[in-house]
Length: 268
Image (tube, rainbow, N blue to C red; front, side, top):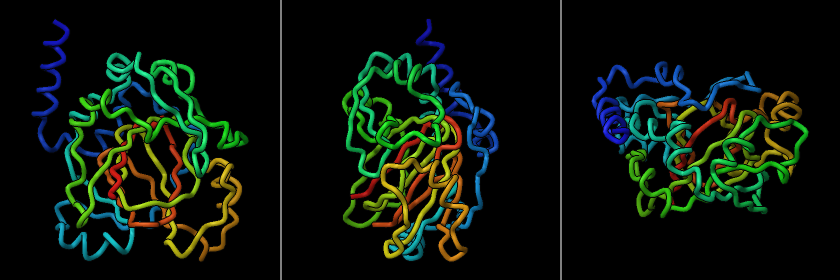
């Protein structure tokens, strides 16, 4: 009976009218994760925002793919995936599974394996500004794709591909005030399923000053306010229904303003 009810709910979600799938509606639904935020400041948004209907794949390649970040709205409809990422559903489906946590410093050296339910109940907590990155455990990236395959196959990745590159997913859940310090790698997309995530980016030739073992919350609180205008990063806070694209080798750091569920599509 329970399986029948769940199937009916999924069917209703898939058939919801397009007007329902909007950022304002998403922001009112926390999926059971809670939206108690320890960080209220969303900051400014100086990254270009494009509606998916106003840009073609060719324009994306020409204007952004190799040049600068962009935020894309309404790119895909992940309503079903969002439903599956609710707290109750993930704990029910994956509570007994083992997940690998990484330290939230630039290089993520230490790994810790815990049961997913233990992580959600005991470790998914707000970040303290004074806690070192090496003492902060972060669930992102080290996913067992065999065990989580049924969830990932429901995700609709951004359709704008790059030539000769293939996508790889990294799924994460993190408490308010957590994040990762500045680092860089290949290009990719980041999408928030629940919560809000504040992004900070610098071009490859403008390496920011930061301590690799201090949390990004510490950088935002202590270093960011002292930056000269010309030293300020590109930044924006993204919400459900928005996807941020960052080009190859761009420095970036993140700060979760709420308990956040998110997924990145790395291109390599």
